[in-house]
Amino acid sequence: MNAGRLRADVAGRIADVLAGAAAPLTDVYVGWTAAHEAATCPARYRGQGEDGWGFPGWSPVLAAGACGRAALAHHIARADLTRRPPPMPVPLVAIRTWMQALRSPPEPGRPAEERSSVGDWVRETWEAGDTATLAAVAATAGRWLAGFVRVLGWPLPPQFTLLNAPGPAAVPSLRWHPDKASPVTVACGADARMGRVTGAGGFALAVHRVSTGDDGALRERAAFESAAGALAIGVPPASVLVTAGDTGERVTLPVDEDLLAQGAERIVGVVTQRAVAVERGFDPADATPSAACRHCDRLADCPPGQGWLAAAGRWRGGLPVLSVLPPG
Amino acid sequence: MLGDVLAAELCPPSPHGLVSLRTELDSAARAAAAIGGWTEDEPLRLSKHLVTGLLRCPRRALNEDHGPSDDVVVGLVVDAVAKLATVSPRRTVTVDAALAFLSALGDSTVADHLAARGSGARQVRAEAAARIEQLAAAWPVIDPAWWPRVEEPVRVALAGGAVTVAGRLDVLLGGPPTGRPAVVVEVKGGRWYDGMRADGHLYALMLALRDGEVPAAAVTVVSDGTTQVEPMRAALLQHAAERLDEAMGIAARVAAGEPPAMSPGAHCQHCPVRPDCPAGQQPQLVAAARDMAAQLQPESR
Image 1 (cartoon, rainbow over the protein chains, first blue to last red):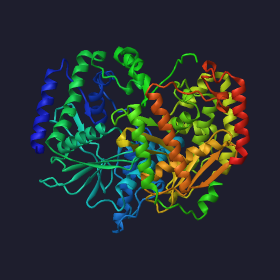
Image 2 (cartoon, rainbow over the protein chains, first blue to last red; image 1 turned 120 degrees about the vertical axis):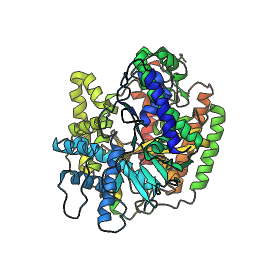
Image 3 (cartoon, rainbow over the protein chains, first blue to last red; image 1 turned 30 degrees about the vertical axis):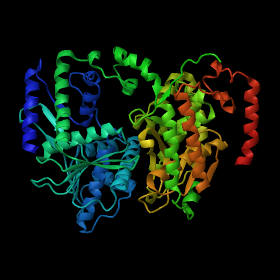
Image 4 (cartoon, each protein chain N blue to C red; image 1 turned 180 degrees about the vertical axis):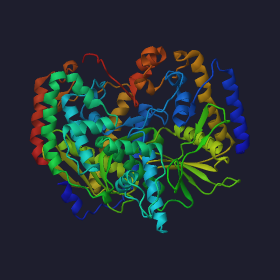
C-alpha cells in the first residue's frame, strides 16, 4: 500500500466517523497511548471523558524520551559544528549541557536551541528553582539516553536522524491531519529514522522503549508507528526497529500491507471511540478486563473489571494472591 | 566504601560460562512452566522480592500486600537519598529533598503513608533522617564517566517468555557501552544481615545475561554504615541461578495447587499476616529460627 492510498483510506474512514458522531468532535489527538488504550479497553479510554486522552503536562517520567532525544540532538549538533563525528555522549553530562544551553543565549559557534515544548518546561522548572524536578529529569532522561545508546550502539547507524526532537540535527515532529479543517491529529512517536526518505521507501523507523511490554504490544506498536509515520512522512517505512532497554532486544518488523492496515485500524479506532464517547461516555459493557483494572480510575463503576479482579485477578504474575488463608 | 571500589582496578570475571548458565536456567524454567501452566501470554513474573519471598516463606510472599510499613517507608526514603546523591551530587540530601525527588518521579507512596500516619509521621521522619545521615556522608561523588543510572530496568525472559525475571537496580555504574566494568549497587534502609547479599547477586546475574558481560562487583550499601563489597565470581552467579531455579520450582508447585509452605523464622517478627499464621504463632519455632539466624550471621559475613 502506498502512502497516498493509505492517506485517502484513513481520511475517508475518519470523515465517515466524524460525520456520524452525535455531536462535533474537537481536538482528537491520536498517538500511541491513545491508540493502545482505545484498543485494549474502549470503556476505560472513553471513561477519561469526551475529550479522550489529554496531554497531562510534562513530568520527569513523561519527559524522559523527549529530554533524552533533545539532549542527544544537542550533543550531535555541537559536534556537527566542529565537523567531527560526535563522541559517545556521557548521559548525565549530555543532559546537563542541554539544560544549561536552554538557559543561555546562544554562544558563537554553538548551535541555537530551537524552541520545544519540553525545553520550555525544563527552562521554566529551572527558573522556578524546582531542583527536585530537575534532578528527576536528569535521572529519567539519563536512563533513557543510556539505554538508547547501549541498544542502538555507537556510532549511531548510518543516515541516522532523530525524530520528535528540536535543533538542527533532528526533525521536530511527525504529525498528519486528514485535512486542514479536521479536528484529528495523528502523531508518530518514533524516536529516529534510519536511511533517507525516497519515493521507494528504504528507510526504517526506530522506536525505543525503556521497558518491554509483551510481544503482542510490540507488534501493535510497530503497526501504529509505521502507519502514523507513513501518513506523516508520505512514504511508508520499509521496516520498524523496536528496541527495549530492559532486555536489550532489537526486533525489526518489516512493514507490509497487513502491518499498515493494522496500524490504520488503530488510528481510526481512536476517533471511533471518541465519537462513541460523545454519545454514550463510559459504558462498562464495552470493558475488556485485564491486569490494568487494578489501577483503573473507573473500577468502582465497572462490574466486569470488579468481576475479573475477583476471579482471574486473584492470580498475579502467574501466582495466586492469598488474602484469606484457610486455617492450618 | 563505594568510592574506594570505583577508584580500584576492577577485573570482571570471564563471561565464558554465561551461555551454559542461561541454558540451565532455560531448562529449569521450561520444567517449572510445564507444572505451573505458564505460557508466553500468561507468564510467571518474578521479581527479586518474589524470589526472596518464595525461598523464605511462600505463604507470606503470596499474601496480598496491604500497604507499606514504617520500616518499608523509611527504606524508600533511604533509597531515594542514594539515587538523588547519584544524579545530583552537589545537593545536600535531606528527608525533604528525598520526598520532593520521589514526588517529582510520581511516587507518592511515602507522602501518602506519612499523611496517613498523622502525628506518628514525625517519628517516621526522624527515623529516616537518622538512617540517611551515615549513608549520605559515605556516598561518593560519582564521576559521570561511570554513566550512573538509577532505577535501571533489567528483564530476562526464560523458556521462550513463559517465565520472566524483572527488576530495577537501585544504581548501576559502568557496563556496556561505557568501556568500564559494571558495578551493581543495592541500597538498603535497615540493618545489615547476610541475606541482603542475594539481591545484588541476582541483579548481577540478570545483567550478565542481558549484556553478555559479568559485572565486576555487587556492592550493598546499608544505612547502618555497612558497605558489603563482593567481587563477582562464577560461583556467585551459579548460586544466584540455583536460587532462581529453586524459586521457580516452588512457584510451580503453588501454581499447580499445592498449598504454600509456611516457614517460620526471624522474618515472622515483621510479618503482617502472622496473626493468621499457625506456624508464625508458635513462639518456640520463631525463636529457634531467630537464634539460628543470629548464630549464622557472623560466620557468613
